[in-house]
Length: 357
Image 1: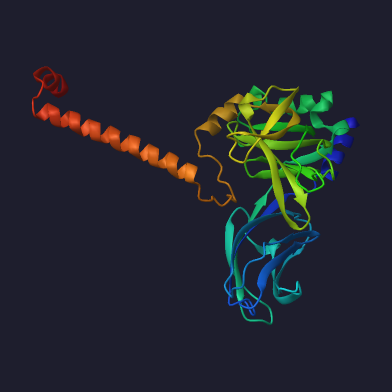
Image 2: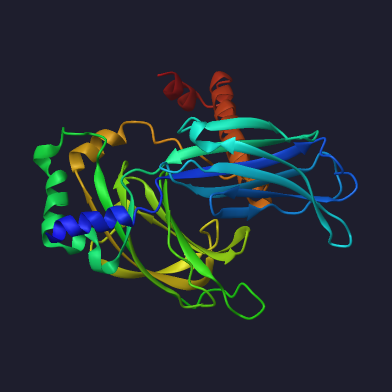
């Protein structure tokens, strides 16, 4: 009975089954854009985002990315509104358009040029709809691996005798997101509104927001299907900022093969590049169950393609690193050419003989 109640609870806590990633690129011939600052409002169901406000231009460029949760059982339209704001903070609607997200192809990025309704001008954007299947969110009291019969059932699914049954179903990951301590303060009052985003491959789940708190407790359990045992679980802590994109607070990256099952661990949050420590720590408890034969077979196949990649920004550090790599490769090639040339010139008889042999 408990197993049935657990499965029902997991289905109820399946908050969404996809992710809509929208990259707002630019506007063309926006009416009145040259006279006032322009911004965009995006709405999908009860989810809202506001773009940054740009300077006066009829052809503004945003290059901003927004993520919306997708519910396949709903038929919500993506509403897009173009607004302008003058120096007196007066806002005026310039135009709008809609996109039927359910009509877009899954697992690929669509480039859309959207004309504004009843107004001249258009918007150019990229929209990618990625499904999240086999994922769930629940409370600690009903976590799947907490029930012995449920754990046994999941373990048997990935035992050796089932190695050639559903080869793509490699494993099962359970993540308990417990709490964070001493987070970075994001507002002037010295507080933050933190929430966590968990990513494994193309699957993405999110905790609720704990408001006005630098030591939030989430106590939620997330499950993911493991499609590649070499994947890395990324847990990012953000500060909710109303209808604006959230502010980054810290991040951890955990290779699945490094997980110690059932052990509660404290992870130091790092910056976006994972190169240095940020402020605060996060407490997680992880379990991964997988079939080693399926995992080995998957190793020889190409990695799963990300449906939506974050736009890479120019970085002097990355540029310098790439220049150094090119220098080293160039020097290695030059030294090899010099060596071969010296062999042909017979500068050293012994060296030339050995080289030709």
